[in-house]
Image (cartoon, rainbow, N blue to C red; front, side, top):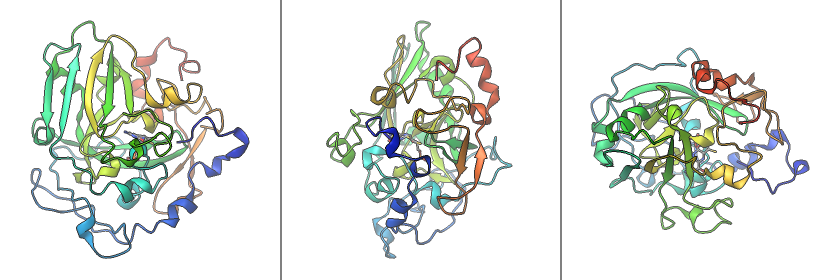
Length: 335
Ligand code: MTE
């Protein structure tokens, strides 16, 4: 993500994601396929790839195989983005501002114990621990397109459960209109949170928000895994939001709190640059970012990151079933 202070003339669209920066780090040397069955296994299967240029996998975060009950849904006709790209080309400013920082800096991130709190305007506030995230909900695989506001996209097989299923357990009060999300705040583990300089100017914790009806939509997912395994830290372990019809920055990672509220909650990128990143952030090829077009996107597949694989961007990222949520709303104004 790029912040407002950079002048129009400083950045061209082709530089939005810088392949040179990415390639400077030699993190991907090999992959080991592992799609598991069985519930959350105690085994140490990993999204094994070598980020340090050696064969020493002891330094890697260990992921576990996950069982899910549904086959892949939603985007199954599209080519998946290879796993090693999904887990090494990341935006997670708490671990650094370049695409390769999160994978390099997050391998010791502690996800267990974890505590996810649901509170605010609910009848029954609940706190889930790490194990609950994998045992209290029916896990399913959902293959979704992820469209970043920076005009690149991926196709990712997530594993998770609907946000609605978690919110229903807490029994929202009729006064609840919005849902506010918060990422873990722990500068001792997240170097980007140590100062505004290292963290891209963000005032941490990273926060996001949805209208309650958006949150309850069946497409809105809480993801606990991808490619058959628990999430690696760079993708938001142990639990992150995935809202496939919105720009990727809405999909907040490593969530510790979900709070129901009657007021529109502040959101991180909107606070940083109001005219560039709206609250709704619905994918919309008709509304350009002030500094680049949103009419098309680079689909990250098996080629290099500067692939010429440019495809048209679809309204709502192709998830047109959400259109009724915005009936009567001028989406050019409410971007
Ligand atoms: N969540 C937190 N806490 N911090 C971040 O920097 N980046 C967002 C989103 N969630 C971000 C975050 C952005 S800009 C995008 S595009 C997606 O995560 C990227 O998800 P991915 O790295 O799994 O592709």
